[in-house]
Amino acid sequence: MRTIAIANQKGGCGKTTTAVNLAAALAEAGQRVLLIDLDPQGHATLGFGFDPESMTRTIYNAIAGNNAAPAAAPIHIIHTIAATGVRNLSLIPSNILLSGGELELARVRNREYVLRDALDSIADGFDLCLIDCSPSLSLLAINALVASTDVIVPVQAHYYALEGLRQLLETVNIVGDRYNPDLTALSILLTFVEPKTALSRQVEKQMRDYFGELVFNTVIRRNIRLAEAPSAGRPIILYDPNSAGAVDYRALAGEIIHGAPAAEIAPHDEQGSRLWADAPDPVAQLTAPTP
Image (tube, rainbow, N blue to C red):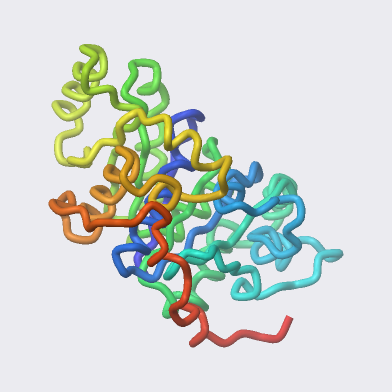
């Protein structure tokens, strides 16, 4: 299973938007996708229409609850997986309990490997796993990097957004050297791009000049429909299949799968009805202890 951490310690860069919409676009392309909400704010969970506070089985129960919280009933990670209603796409939700889970993890031996070890037991059920990290360089983020093969860093096309990027890249290098030799690919995704403005074009040029092939060919343009989609509890390819945001995330999915942006966009109806789940459960083949 290829595992991609979507990380940036700076908020407001489109990290969760990318996690939700890229996961849906990859699933649309036929990949069996698992999205893990590893942010106590639970925004990726909200993005699929769930109320985080009503979720009783979350990523917290699979990592912190199993290892450091005697009062929490141990739950195998397979029992935290929720159907999203999108074919080929499953979600492990999150809520505010995860914020306390980080303190609990700090007392666990080999705490950096807890998420990786949990994911090993379900790796055969998915082609791709995306992890939406919290906006900090925390123990949770370290767990995500240790569990991953790839990192995507969304960066807003603005000068201030470049602050802290070097620190994150150094962290990725350290994690790769010390904990995870499989962490071999890192890519920068430009978000909130406004092609008609000189500032946006200049920032994009400087990013490409400095980071070269680390920067995706695909960029995510600023698009109001992307901002509206979470309120409907749907990814953009269902909320507005023909919007610029849907086009961009399909192109990004194509670049991840094939190494180049998708050249052709398949026609879609307004509801994106062919995405709604009527295919076999991607985790049906997996087994785990009864909760």
